[in-house]
Length: 395
Image 1 (spheres, rainbow, N blue to C red):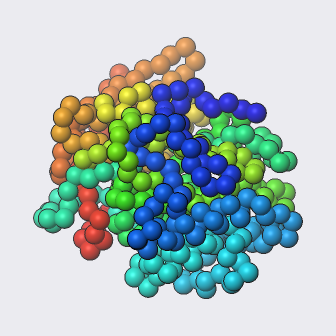
Image 2 (cartoon, one colour; image 1 turned 90 degrees about the vertical axis):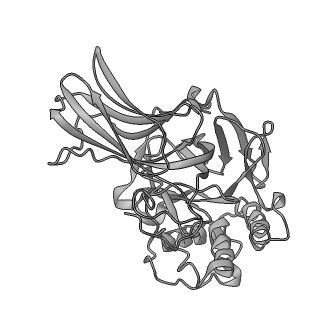
Image 3 (cartoon, rainbow, N blue to C red; image 1 turned 45 degrees about the vertical axis):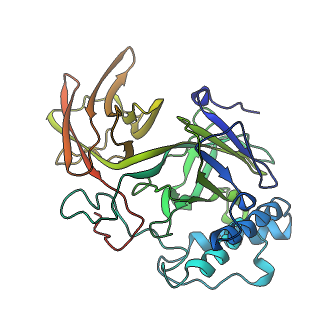
């Protein structure tokens, strides 16, 4: 069995047990939770308790029920955005967390926020320029660094061909804000040496206003689609706590694997959308490249925005880097700084340079990264945050 990566050594560890309960290792300002820890006076709390019971049931399915769960996941993967899917039948409600979560979502938000399968229509940079509404403020956000697959069991082995999605839902519009999304024809190959999902989101800041819902639907590809296995089908929640911790690792055991989410809550933060453009020289052939960001408020933890281990940097004709991720957050005020680094590496050689930015409420900031053989211009677009979706002028 694999052990947790040393990269999580400084993280506060939380585990969600097989029965759906979370076991925190001490207090923190963010907690992974199930419905038992949410106020019963709210509609969300009631639905969360139902989903918690669904998590316990989902871990005991087998045989025919497992086949039906796989079909439910395939139906979700093949659903058309914007199309209203029928609610699950009574005999399907306990097939797993996702169908139960769908029913609870339809009850609370159906007809108001579109379809359960809709992707968020709110983009980043909503208040970078132009008039700023009164409800746009620095707010609590959730910085999500990585999602790692570990502890394979029950007939699964490395390498693992993974498809499906991981998404969050928050108070801005209650629609999916995807962190990872791949089809079966474009699966990611995970190895024991590199078991980290290649995240491509969030597409905008994850607002930590009350509960953040994490929705996981991952499949392990086999020789035929009928033989594909459910890697993980989970719903769990993160809520604002009372104490401050720099970073947290949430470990979620499933019958086929364990998922490890590395994340950190930020208070009084703003959204930062990063772009990188080559403005002088050229990227050298055969040099591995990385672009990542970090902040003073979260020590020794970086957000990987682009990773090119094969030495082929995705740079467009206009010099723009095709970043895998571009939306991060930074705390406003105090001494927090946002650092964006670009590095080039080959055997026996490493060069790195960074641009440092002081967070702002709006507008843009520009810095330079000089690697000697080429120069990159780093631009950060700042934006305040709002729980309202009425000013959806994102790009």
